[in-house]
Amino acid sequence: MPAKLLEGKSVALKIKENIKLEIESLKNKYGAGPKLVSVQVGENPASEIYIKSQEKTARDLGITYELKKIDAGITQDEFIEIIDSLNKDKSTHGIIVQMPLPQHIDAKLISRYISSLKDIEAVHPENMGEIVFGKAKILPCTAAACMELLNSIDSLELYGKEAVVVGHSEIVGKPLALLLLNKFVTTTVCHIATGQRGTLPEFVKKAEILIVAVGKAGLVKGDWIKEGAIVIDVGINRVEGKIVGDVEFDKAFEKASYITPVPGGVGPLTVTILMRNVVEAFKQQQTK
Ligand code: NAP
Image 1 (cartoon, protein in one colour):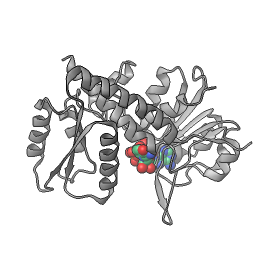
Image 2 (cartoon, rainbow, N blue to C red):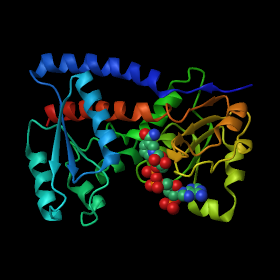
Image 3 (tube, rainbow, N blue to C red):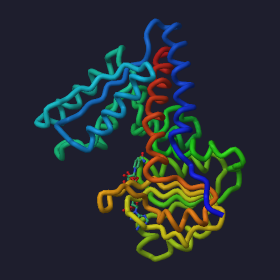
């Protein structure tokens, strides 16, 4: 039987309604709501799309959004000073650094300088570490979006399920594997070495829940999908002017019970989770 579509938009709408209500009550309680500052170094057409979507979502929800544009010639030390001043600014509750940064600025180093309380992308080692302990309140957006998609399936009991995550990046695959483990999902993580060894199909075939976050169109073949599996395709690839995922959609659709479309699956949820993180950061800062 063909799969049901797991669409991010409807899940995002429900979360947005809750965020709106929460922001209203926070504004009543504290006299002001959350503010997100987005920092962009130099010009980058790819990040413009994300910035516009973040700005619109924030405004719709009642979050103040400020875009700080910085000249690409800034030194790393000067950039760290800007981050530090935002850390100290009491009216800024969330900081997002738009990627990519110019090559002379080390993105991983910068993530350590953002206050962990304002790190709404959860890239600071402290926020990453909280995931290990199952205590994180600010979660990496894409990984959390995948969990929300799974939670949206009413009949799904995660406890004891077998999941395979393909891709072990720090922003998606690794935190996602931990979030699944925290729900007692038996989780296997596949990566480049699995691909090189040629055993990726074996792992994928066992997955009751399959989440693919690699960035290679058609990497996962439709006939590898286990009958009835839940498939979340995080990948975004441009092929002949079209956006496609990492999974061969048409064939996988015939075997899966649920599958995300690309585009329209994980993507619409990611920015919503970012805004939820801003609200969480705001709340945490009211008690510090
Ligand atoms: P990334 O940092 O490039 O990570 C890709 C991962 O895939 C790496 O862990 C890599 O391993 C692994 N990999 C590469 N080739 C493989 C193979 N043949 N078999 C198994 N694993 C392989 O990318 P990312 O930031 O995690 O993003 C992954 C994809 O998701 C991209 O297409 C990105 O555009 C998309 N994405 C979508 C959203 C959304 O909101 N929908 C958000 C974020 C990312 P090594 O590092 O060891 O090479």
